[in-house]
Image 1: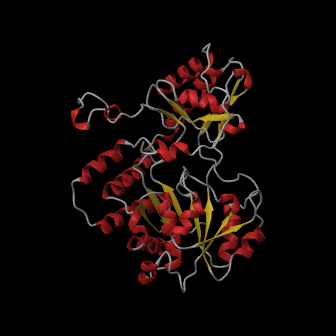
Image 2: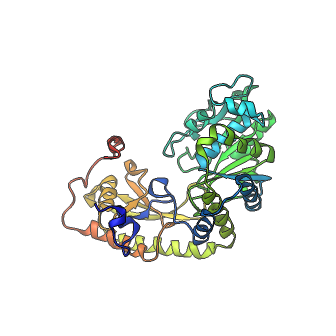
Length: 401
């Protein structure tokens, strides 16, 4: 491969770096680059990149924007949602005690250091969420079982050592049998325990604080389409304590001025975004794909709502043996195509996957429809067309080879 400086200026950056020109119908996935950053954020990042700024003052400006958009008393920008969770938990442990902040994570003497979380919320989003708790130096206290959490499970888990409780809103969590946010907050607040909400992939920037949460952590790079970042918002005392973790465990999670400015711009662009127009374009893509799959033996498709009530739909594609594919095999064939189409494949062992329309460039919906029909109507099948879904970490272990 040619070096970066040897390549011509008329090639795309993916071509220059030897990267596949994928089409993302999986969603706002970190493993695929997080999001298509909106022009307003790109402009703000470029404008501030060459400037010196006082970072605390920049974060004060960010706090005003975050507060306006979320309804929180204060807020700040951090590296990502995972770091925001760690910072919020550490802040609940230390408050504004600067020496305690420096002592984390291994020295928690004299601090409340337990965090309660429903067992059905202990998910993996690329890393286990309980690790974000443990990085702060806190102890994870699971409440309930994987299929049901009762009120007494949480109530009895709370004690004088409890620093905070974490509530996770994500399609990864168990979607039944868990306590609602309102119930969870009521139980925790009765014992003076603050509730932190992980709302990384959520569209609604205001409801979780309104429903009782004390701190909410959002992703700045998913539906907001900003740079990779996290947004922490909520009660001023808790936000301040979380922000001060930049003097401690969060030093390794620091965010640059470019990401702060870009996230602020993405938030402000969110206020002006044509959300209804975006929904119409997404619906058109879903209907196009559903129509493309009609009449193909062994393939079914239905438009389904987002499981956490975000205002968007996806196409659920059912793959039966008559298609001469498994769901895993069809997902692999699409990913190996030209161009590669990456589907939302986290449930392929159940015989289906999803097509998500929220990250498409103009013209890509039509390419996806063509790829679907081409792969499914081809006379021959790839060797792994009927492969079973398996967990395989071998590829991760080969990096960077």
